[in-house]
Length: 139
Image 1 (cartoon, rainbow, N blue to C red):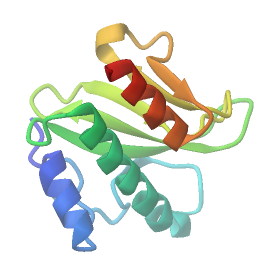
Image 2: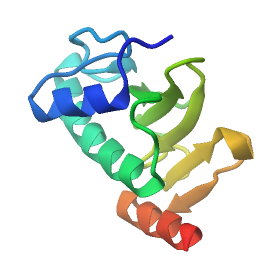
Image 3: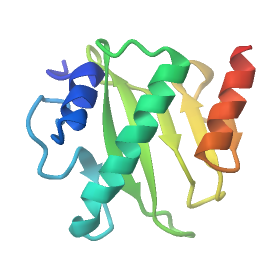
């Protein structure tokens, strides 16, 4: 069971703090794994927290029942890329996996547990395009 939730993580971020899912100040800026220089994690985290807030607001995700963690991914072919995972505080299972720009396709992608993780639930040319596509799907 997670000790911190999205509401706490996002509020801490607004105060310039970074909480991991255990509720601890994260010296890794909430990154679970990375292949980039550690000195770039803070800037990446700042960007991902802002994107997380936009995604959570758009999708109406219950901030008290979920938490977020970040990952810097290293594909076999393609450039490094970042992603964020929104997980259940109870089961700790990933519910949503989002990348603002995949190192495989070059597109922003969202995968949702309810639809299976085999194909993207939605895509976009970039993160803002992805959000617009998700908004259109909700209409």
